[in-house]
Amino acid sequence: MPSRPRASIPPVASVGPLFYPFYPERLQQDRKGRSLSLPGMGYSGGSASTSQYETVSTGTTGHAESVKITFDPSQVSFSELLRVFFSVATDPTELNRQSPDEGTQYRSVIFYANEDQKQIALAYIDQLNKAKVFSGPIVTQVVPLKVFHPAEEYHQNFLARNPTYPYIVYNDMPKSRELQKQFPDLYKR
Image (cartoon, rainbow, N blue to C red; front, side, top):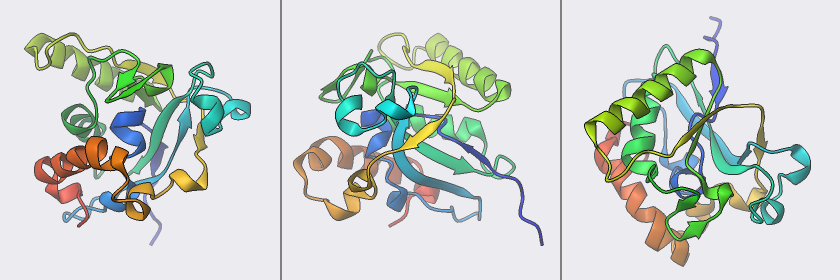
């Protein structure tokens, strides 16, 4: 039986929100059998020649630290992914900052793969702003995905290999617990 076509995009990208709290080992195909995976951490928004952690960390490359999300849109909607992003992953009112990290590489950004995703993201942000869900206006950027550059191997599955690392304990585990609480069908134990 041929498999369904899959969309491969990082619809949400940013360091605090996604580089670590949404480890692939924490998300899984949910209990309803819907396909969703995060094949890796990386960088989006800049060129291949500047897609190394030390260079991206300068904040001068155009990259945002990001996670690539692969999903079957007939099973998991882009809107559902946005719900996770805005509910758990990020403070979308912080400009060029997430948790203790500052710089353009930490900006809140949605990289969309097509015009439908762009319109859905913009409408979702507009709805959240009108409802005053957050204490200030949402500054999340919505920009086209050009390319996703995988991060270095030591960033992949970092939480599983370093669960007691202080940054993880203080900044990312609370988001991981919130993910488990709000979206139990997407959380792998």
